[in-house]
Length: 327
Image (tube, rainbow, N blue to C red; front, side, top):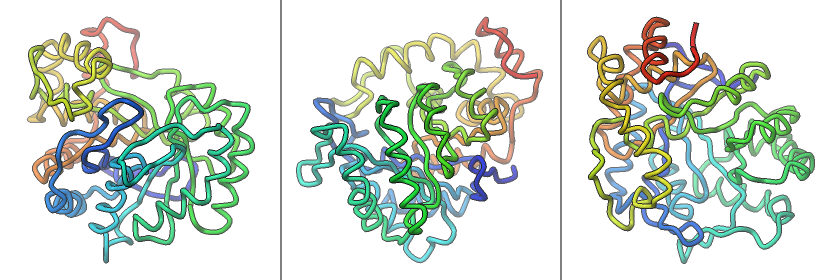
């Protein structure tokens, strides 16, 4: 597959990114265990290298992930290879590195006041002098505060600290407001074969914004590795009831019916789920979480197959009994 541009920018990325949440290790978000269990930093480094070697050039992390640990490991793994990678990271929360605890800022205005300092912290951890895509991580940020935040982000662009910016949110109204920024090029939002986002995709297509897709594999439910009786360790974010109700339950209920279409042509389930996203819109760039070399190879292999066909997309719409999503 050919590379895709991040929206209206000239930043070219592989059609598939590597989500770096899981390589952050253990951390807490408010009162929730937010990591994906224990990690091996050496394995994480090998995984980043394997992703690069298999054609993945886009890496999405955040200051939150492991309270900076994911950024640090990614920066170390890309040492001497920075020119091969496009780095996206996120900001907007109070990060207690020592306690590995993420909380709200005391006041919403602190997000703007701390913008520069948070950017500098991420640059240091990533061991780079610029960030390609800098994304607001506060999904419910008040829309009335957006103009002031955009002004601050434009200052970071003019200084060369970031190349472009975006917002990780499922709010179409918020995304529309953020798109007023000259260098706003991407919206990160949930999207997978079971959890469609037609309104957000329509906005991205109309405004020429990249649709960066989190949870493209429904937190692993679309890989075929889990069942309705699966349980996760208490230090794994997927043990949270919201995660199960939002991703696992609705996906596992439909997976058997989708299996034949998604695995057509020799694809694995994982590769078929990614193929659906590429066929859904030319603006999409899925960023599945990848934490092992084997996962990097399998995910990257999806690019060799490319998107599903229009007929396969119609079959999936029929199975899911929803309006047609693809011509």
